[in-house]
Amino acid sequence: MLQRFRATRPSHGTVVAYLALFVALSGSAYAAATIGSGQIKNGAVLGRHIKDGQVKGADIAPNALSSSKIPDNSLAGNDIDESKLGRVPLAALADLATNSGHATNADLASNASHANSADSAGDASHATNSDQLGGLGPSSFFPSGNVRKLDVTRTGCSSFCLNELDLGTFKLQTTCLAASMGNTARLDVSTTVTGPNPRVDWFVTVIPNAGAATTTSGQNAGGALFSVPAANASSAKFSATIVYRDDASVVTNTITGNVVHNSSFNVSCQVDGTATKATG
Image (cartoon, rainbow, N blue to C red; front, side):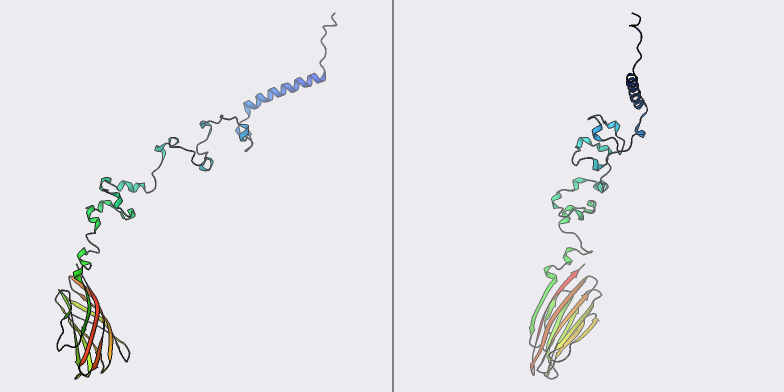
């Protein structure tokens, strides 16, 4: 009977099995208590090793996610804290818009980039036609009364012909006559000026029917300017620029024409051109 209850000696296989179980259990406890992030190789833990929904916001380090990690158009307005946003570039200039009410009708701003400073628009109605350009008022820029065209033909005058051009303080005269006892023709150009501190500058090129072209220039305070001669039974062409200035105005006159000596005292002169006057 006693022999039935005698302890039996465990086999080697049983001892090894229990030893393995003990090591396995104690190893897991040890790992859970002592293994941290420093003992895990970089890149060893993959997404499939992490249970869905287990990574929380508190588990993500600041600045750990870059824009490349966030899908395009995945953030909505309520995901963004507006108070954390900086000022948009150039938005500082918006502070200069002291009173947006001045923009009576934004549709009239054909080019907003030109609105450097709305404060400078003292009266928006003036924006339709600027009060001044280069310090000169609108009336200075060639209203109809300040523009003249010349298209005249003269067949000879015993003295100065009528004014070819009259712009008030500046008048242009031409004389078409036979010279040298009727053997040649000549066109004389002169001015009458009455403005304050007048000055006349001119440049003329004469091209005779036979011969080389000549260019001359001069300056005076009004009176005779230049002559265009034509030889016997010949002709000459010319082009000239005449600029008159005084303290209140500038007249620019460009003319072209020709002088023809037909025979004896039979002469003719043609003068064409334009003149413009600016005041201010």
